[in-house]
Image 1 (cartoon, rainbow, N blue to C red):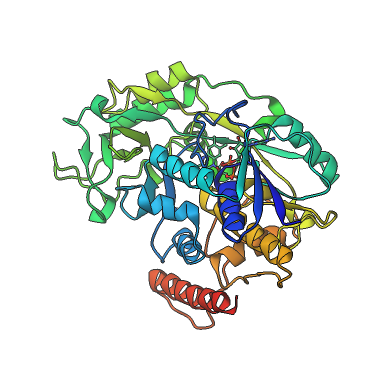
Image 2: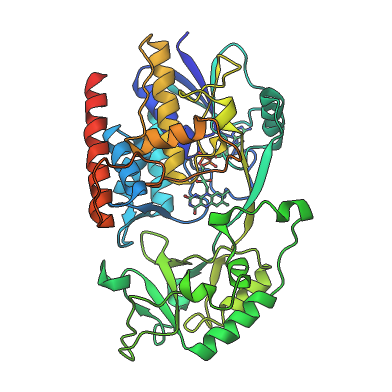
Length: 433
Ligand code: FAD
């Protein structure tokens, strides 16, 4: 019975459905968006990017860039569609979010082996292979079932997303286009601040009213997605060394470096929308308008989406999953995507890819397809499935990829070397299958 149920047509589920279907396996793809949307999903299309339109770095001196290249070599539908819908963003792979999602939706709907069921999956089937890729905002009913299935406390924490403004509402008499250190073609819009403007903004930011979170939720904010107001609370100059750092930017109006700079990045293909980089926030919407409009150049900014805090959910994969991403205690259940603790868009695609290939191999009675930590994808799967204390979600990084035997001082050269080993290794593994 070569049929697999995939739950969720997000980043992981879309990739997995494609990989299974193209290998001749019938897929029942459950996606609930048409009848029920999570608090972050807005459109009916698949593989929706719920926050940033950037999939992160695209160069091989970066672990996320390496992961993308590995995925390209594995014929990833999601990365191919991202490449096809790219918008200018310097070294990053950013996309027109609608074009990207539409392309993936169209391809999956056209595939003969995929049956799309636009319902919320509530009961996990026992008689079929099931891949759960329902994401960080898994519906409540399914969350409960997963909780029962894994006999563990279901884990939640809170992430935050950044606001988006329209280009035409940005005052370009004050703001200017430039990429940091002149790398790129001036894709970013920069809003400069002098010291006085910075401190006025800073004081407003740390005293602004936040949306309420329950006390127990307060403790569970994920470090990498810390709201800008919280980063600010850690010290009055933290932002100047973090998201508002002016280094590598020269204001063409003064030929000088400013005290602080807020950067905005293109969010759609036409370049009409820009998101405020690093401004994930939990401020109340009215407060966002008031405080972020104090940023020079944004005084009349039109906010088309405000930042939000959102729930995140993941199972303790390090104890629960084997290296094919199958639940150790059940032979028919696999997990992929952010729910496994593989953090971020690209890692979600990677675990979707690996679960699907392994399910396909199993149905075809081939041996498992395991990549080791020489590759970025292998390192990610290893990280989330190897036993450890205090498991926290992890995105692609060189810290988990196998280091070199030789010593190379220059960081960029070192990372490029690690990447070339990874890709050589992957090519050999691909030749084997
Ligand atoms: P998703 O892409 O969320 O897909 C899961 C799908 O399952 C959804 O379409 C959902 O409707 C569906 N679903 C849920 N329950 C059911 C059910 N019971 N039955 C049927 N369908 C169901 N990562 C980044 O790299 N950059 C960011 O900027 C970023 N911002 C984020 C902002 C928010 C608000 C959130 C929540 C997450 C963010 N992430 C970000 C983290 C993560 O990478 C993304 O959420 C990513 O989309 C995860 O991919 P996924 O496939 O696991 O889940």
